Image 1: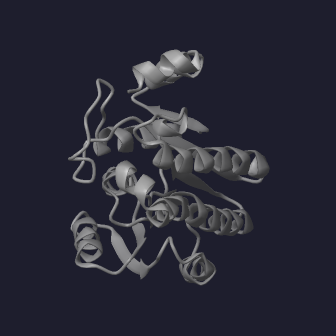
Image 2: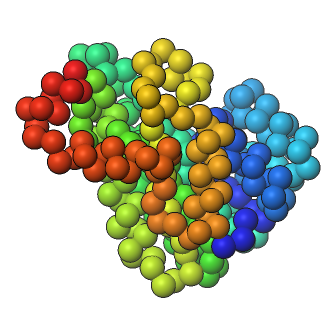
Length: 247
Protein backbone atom coordinates (compact mmCIF):
# COMPACT_ATOMS: atom_id res chain seq x y z
CA UNK A 1 0.00 0.00 0.00
CA UNK A 2 1.44 3.37 -1.03
CA UNK A 3 1.83 6.25 1.46
CA UNK A 4 -1.23 8.54 1.46
CA UNK A 5 -1.26 11.76 -0.52
CA UNK A 6 -3.85 13.29 1.82
CA UNK A 7 -4.16 12.88 5.59
CA UNK A 8 -6.82 13.88 8.11
CA UNK A 9 -5.71 13.86 11.74
CA UNK A 10 -8.44 13.77 14.39
CA UNK A 11 -6.55 15.05 17.40
CA UNK A 12 -4.30 17.51 15.62
CA UNK A 13 -1.94 18.20 18.52
CA UNK A 14 -1.18 14.54 19.31
CA UNK A 15 2.57 13.98 19.40
CA UNK A 16 2.18 10.56 17.80
CA UNK A 17 -0.03 12.02 15.07
CA UNK A 18 2.42 14.82 14.32
CA UNK A 19 5.37 12.42 14.23
CA UNK A 20 3.36 10.29 11.80
CA UNK A 21 2.47 13.31 9.66
CA UNK A 22 6.12 14.36 9.48
CA UNK A 23 7.16 10.89 8.39
CA UNK A 24 4.43 10.65 5.76
CA UNK A 25 5.16 14.14 4.40
CA UNK A 26 8.77 13.05 3.88
CA UNK A 27 7.44 10.20 1.70
CA UNK A 28 4.42 11.29 -0.30
CA UNK A 29 1.77 13.14 1.70
CA UNK A 30 1.05 16.63 0.39
CA UNK A 31 -2.23 17.63 2.03
CA UNK A 32 -2.85 17.48 5.78
CA UNK A 33 -5.93 18.42 7.78
CA UNK A 34 -5.40 18.91 11.51
CA UNK A 35 -8.69 18.65 13.40
CA UNK A 36 -8.75 19.71 17.04
CA UNK A 37 -9.82 22.33 19.50
CA UNK A 38 -8.67 25.78 18.30
CA UNK A 39 -5.51 26.66 20.21
CA UNK A 40 -2.01 28.07 19.74
CA UNK A 41 -0.74 24.48 19.89
CA UNK A 42 -2.89 23.50 16.91
CA UNK A 43 -1.68 26.47 14.87
CA UNK A 44 1.92 25.76 15.85
CA UNK A 45 1.55 22.16 14.69
CA UNK A 46 0.15 23.36 11.38
CA UNK A 47 3.04 25.80 10.90
CA UNK A 48 5.55 23.05 11.64
CA UNK A 49 4.09 20.78 8.96
CA UNK A 50 3.81 23.62 6.42
CA UNK A 51 7.53 24.21 6.85
CA UNK A 52 8.05 20.64 5.62
CA UNK A 53 6.31 21.44 2.34
CA UNK A 54 2.77 20.22 2.95
CA UNK A 55 -0.46 22.12 2.42
CA UNK A 56 -1.93 22.17 5.91
CA UNK A 57 -5.39 23.25 7.02
CA UNK A 58 -6.89 23.28 10.49
CA UNK A 59 -10.50 22.69 11.45
CA UNK A 60 -12.27 22.91 14.79
CA UNK A 61 -13.10 19.49 16.21
CA UNK A 62 -14.24 18.50 19.70
CA UNK A 63 -14.31 14.82 20.66
CA UNK A 64 -16.82 15.63 23.40
CA UNK A 65 -19.31 17.04 20.91
CA UNK A 66 -20.22 14.03 18.74
CA UNK A 67 -23.27 15.83 17.35
CA UNK A 68 -20.88 18.14 15.49
CA UNK A 69 -18.71 15.42 13.97
CA UNK A 70 -20.88 14.86 10.92
CA UNK A 71 -20.62 18.52 9.89
CA UNK A 72 -16.91 18.83 10.65
CA UNK A 73 -15.84 15.71 8.77
CA UNK A 74 -18.29 16.51 6.00
CA UNK A 75 -16.48 19.79 5.36
CA UNK A 76 -13.14 18.01 5.06
CA UNK A 77 -14.32 15.28 2.68
CA UNK A 78 -16.22 17.86 0.60
CA UNK A 79 -12.84 19.39 -0.30
CA UNK A 80 -11.58 16.18 -1.91
CA UNK A 81 -10.69 12.57 -1.24
CA UNK A 82 -8.82 11.68 1.96
CA UNK A 83 -6.41 8.77 1.68
CA UNK A 84 -5.91 8.29 5.41
CA UNK A 85 -7.74 9.24 8.58
CA UNK A 86 -5.69 9.01 11.77
CA UNK A 87 -7.87 8.92 14.88
CA UNK A 88 -5.39 10.08 17.50
CA UNK A 89 -7.31 11.95 20.19
CA UNK A 90 -7.61 10.70 23.75
CA UNK A 91 -6.86 11.54 27.37
CA UNK A 92 -5.11 9.55 30.08
CA UNK A 93 -7.07 11.00 32.96
CA UNK A 94 -5.92 10.66 36.55
CA UNK A 95 -6.88 7.29 38.03
CA UNK A 96 -7.00 8.40 41.68
CA UNK A 97 -9.00 11.54 40.93
CA UNK A 98 -11.27 9.78 38.46
CA UNK A 99 -12.18 7.18 41.08
CA UNK A 100 -13.10 9.95 43.51
CA UNK A 101 -14.94 12.02 40.90
CA UNK A 102 -17.12 9.88 38.61
CA UNK A 103 -17.80 12.86 36.34
CA UNK A 104 -14.08 12.99 35.54
CA UNK A 105 -14.10 9.26 34.78
CA UNK A 106 -17.06 9.76 32.46
CA UNK A 107 -15.11 12.45 30.61
CA UNK A 108 -12.30 9.95 29.96
CA UNK A 109 -14.81 7.41 28.65
CA UNK A 110 -16.66 9.95 26.51
CA UNK A 111 -13.46 11.27 24.95
CA UNK A 112 -11.67 7.98 24.37
CA UNK A 113 -14.64 5.82 23.45
CA UNK A 114 -17.91 7.64 22.73
CA UNK A 115 -16.27 10.44 20.76
CA UNK A 116 -14.10 7.97 18.88
CA UNK A 117 -17.07 5.77 17.97
CA UNK A 118 -18.91 8.74 16.49
CA UNK A 119 -15.92 10.07 14.57
CA UNK A 120 -14.81 6.60 13.49
CA UNK A 121 -18.17 5.65 12.03
CA UNK A 122 -18.52 8.94 10.17
CA UNK A 123 -14.97 8.74 8.79
CA UNK A 124 -15.45 5.11 7.78
CA UNK A 125 -18.64 5.92 5.89
CA UNK A 126 -16.92 8.78 4.06
CA UNK A 127 -13.98 6.55 3.10
CA UNK A 128 -16.37 3.85 1.91
CA UNK A 129 -18.28 6.38 -0.18
CA UNK A 130 -15.12 7.47 -1.97
CA UNK A 131 -14.15 3.80 -2.37
CA UNK A 132 -10.67 3.82 -0.86
CA UNK A 133 -8.58 4.93 2.08
CA UNK A 134 -7.27 3.87 5.46
CA UNK A 135 -8.62 4.48 8.95
CA UNK A 136 -5.86 4.20 11.55
CA UNK A 137 -6.93 4.20 15.19
CA UNK A 138 -4.59 4.70 18.14
CA UNK A 139 -5.49 2.22 20.84
CA UNK A 140 -3.13 1.21 23.67
CA UNK A 141 -1.58 -1.84 25.23
CA UNK A 142 -3.70 -0.82 28.25
CA UNK A 143 -6.71 -2.13 26.32
CA UNK A 144 -5.49 -5.71 26.62
CA UNK A 145 -6.05 -6.30 30.34
CA UNK A 146 -7.31 -4.12 33.19
CA UNK A 147 -4.73 -2.94 35.72
CA UNK A 148 -5.46 -1.45 39.11
CA UNK A 149 -3.47 1.67 38.29
CA UNK A 150 -5.24 2.65 35.04
CA UNK A 151 -8.41 0.60 34.61
CA UNK A 152 -10.59 3.60 33.75
CA UNK A 153 -8.33 4.64 30.88
CA UNK A 154 -7.71 1.01 29.95
CA UNK A 155 -11.40 0.17 29.81
CA UNK A 156 -12.07 3.10 27.47
CA UNK A 157 -9.28 1.93 25.18
CA UNK A 158 -10.54 -1.66 25.37
CA UNK A 159 -13.90 -0.49 24.08
CA UNK A 160 -12.23 1.49 21.31
CA UNK A 161 -10.01 -1.44 20.37
CA UNK A 162 -12.94 -3.85 20.10
CA UNK A 163 -14.95 -1.29 18.14
CA UNK A 164 -12.10 -0.79 15.68
CA UNK A 165 -11.65 -4.52 15.11
CA UNK A 166 -15.36 -4.91 14.42
CA UNK A 167 -15.38 -1.91 12.12
CA UNK A 168 -12.49 -3.41 10.19
CA UNK A 169 -14.46 -6.62 9.72
CA UNK A 170 -17.52 -4.64 8.61
CA UNK A 171 -15.48 -2.77 5.98
CA UNK A 172 -13.48 -5.76 4.75
CA UNK A 173 -13.68 -5.97 0.97
CA UNK A 174 -14.99 -2.41 0.52
CA UNK A 175 -11.64 -0.86 -0.36
CA UNK A 176 -11.27 0.69 3.09
CA UNK A 177 -8.39 -0.51 5.25
CA UNK A 178 -8.77 -0.32 9.04
CA UNK A 179 -5.72 -0.62 11.31
CA UNK A 180 -5.57 -0.55 15.10
CA UNK A 181 -2.30 0.54 16.72
CA UNK A 182 -1.41 -0.63 20.23
CA UNK A 183 1.58 1.26 21.61
CA UNK A 184 3.14 0.55 24.96
CA UNK A 185 4.00 3.40 27.30
CA UNK A 186 4.85 6.39 25.07
CA UNK A 187 7.41 8.91 26.27
CA UNK A 188 6.01 12.39 25.66
CA UNK A 189 5.01 15.57 27.49
CA UNK A 190 1.60 14.05 28.22
CA UNK A 191 3.09 11.08 30.04
CA UNK A 192 6.01 12.87 31.73
CA UNK A 193 4.57 12.28 35.20
CA UNK A 194 3.91 8.57 34.64
CA UNK A 195 6.29 5.76 35.45
CA UNK A 196 8.10 4.30 32.44
CA UNK A 197 8.35 0.57 31.73
CA UNK A 198 10.95 -1.61 30.00
CA UNK A 199 8.71 -1.57 26.92
CA UNK A 200 8.52 2.21 26.68
CA UNK A 201 8.40 3.64 23.17
CA UNK A 202 8.41 7.08 21.52
CA UNK A 203 6.09 9.00 19.18
CA UNK A 204 8.64 8.59 16.41
CA UNK A 205 8.80 4.82 16.88
CA UNK A 206 5.02 4.61 16.74
CA UNK A 207 5.03 6.72 13.57
CA UNK A 208 7.55 4.36 11.98
CA UNK A 209 5.40 1.37 12.91
CA UNK A 210 2.29 3.03 11.48
CA UNK A 211 3.99 3.67 8.15
CA UNK A 212 5.26 0.09 8.01
CA UNK A 213 1.79 -1.20 8.90
CA UNK A 214 0.26 0.83 6.10
CA UNK A 215 2.74 -0.53 3.58
CA UNK A 216 2.03 -4.08 4.71
CA UNK A 217 -1.73 -3.60 4.90
CA UNK A 218 -1.65 -4.71 8.55
CA UNK A 219 -4.81 -4.82 10.64
CA UNK A 220 -3.04 -4.68 14.02
CA UNK A 221 0.26 -3.03 14.92
CA UNK A 222 2.08 -3.41 18.26
CA UNK A 223 4.76 -0.92 19.28
CA UNK A 224 7.27 -2.24 20.13
CA UNK A 225 6.52 -5.47 18.30
CA UNK A 226 7.58 -7.73 21.17
CA UNK A 227 4.59 -6.45 23.15
CA UNK A 228 2.45 -8.94 21.25
CA UNK A 229 4.11 -11.88 23.02
CA UNK A 230 4.29 -10.11 26.37
CA UNK A 231 0.57 -9.33 26.36
CA UNK A 232 -0.30 -12.85 25.16
CA UNK A 233 1.43 -14.16 28.27
CA UNK A 234 -0.17 -11.59 30.58
CA UNK A 235 -3.66 -12.29 29.23
CA UNK A 236 -3.33 -15.93 30.24
CA UNK A 237 -2.02 -15.35 33.75
CA UNK A 238 -4.38 -16.31 36.57
CA UNK A 239 -6.09 -13.21 37.87
CA UNK A 240 -4.64 -13.46 41.39
CA UNK A 241 -1.08 -13.63 40.00
CA UNK A 242 -1.69 -10.83 37.51
CA UNK A 243 -3.09 -8.68 40.33
CA UNK A 244 0.15 -9.03 42.27
CA UNK A 245 2.34 -8.33 39.23
CA UNK A 246 0.31 -5.27 38.25
CA UNK A 247 0.46 -3.59 41.65
